[in-house]
Image (tube, rainbow, N blue to C red; front, side):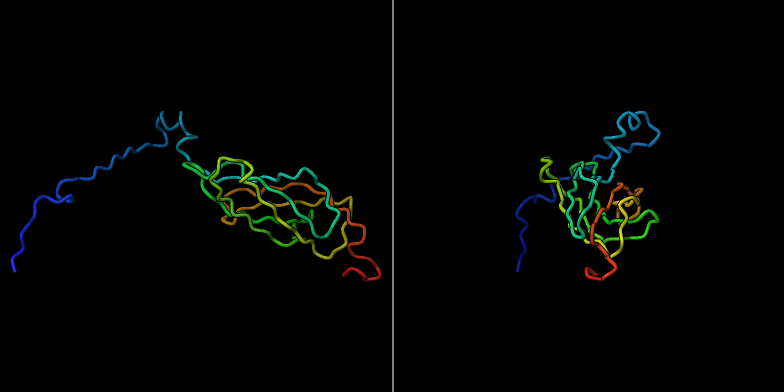
Length: 159
């Protein structure tokens, strides 16, 4: 059996070229275009305007501020409620902020929360905490007021 080469193949003709530009952090171009070159995680903000909770089970809407793209990366957030001492008083919801759409309506999330069966004071401070799972960012804290008429009573009807 004879092998006959049939001519020049694509692999023999084409040489890939990789163009790489190293940009130091202290260079002038980097300092001028820092927003363009830095990769930052997308942020999630509370979209619901109401800061008063009146039920044990409720929903809140959240908004992914930027679309995931060239210099914005996806992040997973944990969202929950705490009291003024930092004790968790609700279940933990997970928001995976990975939306790439430029349409703001497509970058909204709805989370349903369940509060623990505790006695809540309408004068105490409670906080919604939005924290990323990696712990790279400082957690956001939004103040809330919880005013539930019959959360826990002395007759033990609701627990």
